[in-house]
Amino acid sequence: LGFNLPQVLYSSNDTGDLQFHGAILIPSADLNPGVPMTSVKGTVNLKGHYSNNQLGDFAGDIAIDSMKVAGRDADTVKAAFSKPQGDPNLHIKSIQGNLAGGAVAGDATVSIGPTTPHYAVNMVLRNADIQQVAGDQSLNGKFTASLELEGDANDPKSRIGRGDVLASGKDMY
Image (cartoon, rainbow, N blue to C red; front, side):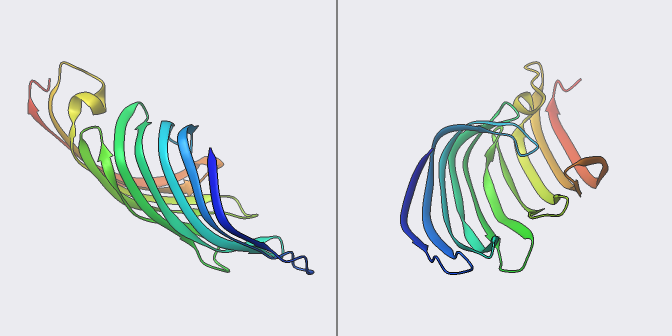
């Protein structure tokens, strides 16, 4: 990882204020926020402040040039994120990109802080290559799916959601 932080301001008063803005440069990294993401290459631009042992306003954008998501190729992934002061949730909005030969879009919210992490995800994948999605080279066709899922990160039994799948093409069975 590389860091480009042109502004970091620290105030040594009682609150220990820290203001920052800059970028995290990702030449290649592996992440697992519930779904394995490998060979991640891109940039995260961020701006925020930290005060009284708490993250205050925090916002930025994500630009991923390429990565693998659960072993499937993804590229040109962009999103905006924010965590307003006093809000325990990190909001990831306007997720857009290419995944498995199709277009992916959606948003997510993740609670951060001292409580049990909670998440909510809304995603749509349109016209993906069914061979890439299924990992089966004998299939020929397209795959479209939507997913709404939420739950507590530490409790798989708390997960609830719904979704739709449409698979079309020749030689599907």
